[in-house]
Length: 152
Image (tube, rainbow, N blue to C red; front, side):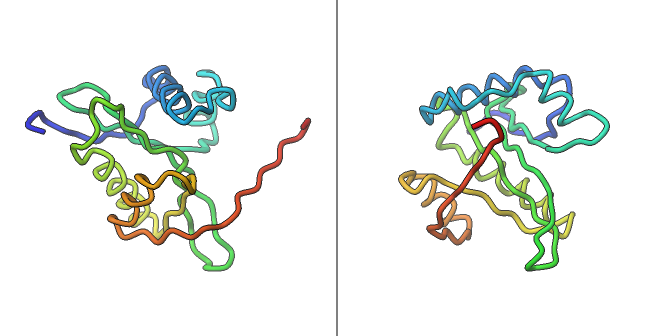
């Protein structure tokens, strides 16, 4: 890609654009019904008194091409901070130009600065993503994922 590529933190003014990309990711995965967050919730949870998440945009020539979002908590077994990658998404027309790798490396840099390690989940049938993560040096473990919400 010959156009300038940059990575920058997601800011409060970007919430609507982030939500649009989240919808595109949910549509891509056939899971749109699970995306229930609102722009107001993203604003409060990311930029309110107690931010719960952070994110990065990758831009190509000033146009947002993709994003990564993550949270930080603590892993008791290792005694170390942990960053959990929530989403990684590059718009289809920007794929195959190394932008996903640039986003992942930027997340890894943030983790290194925080003294944290990074973990995330991937759908077991997403072989392209698994191969991508393994190329970056990640180890992929087949484990079950559980979830629970009140009111279910």
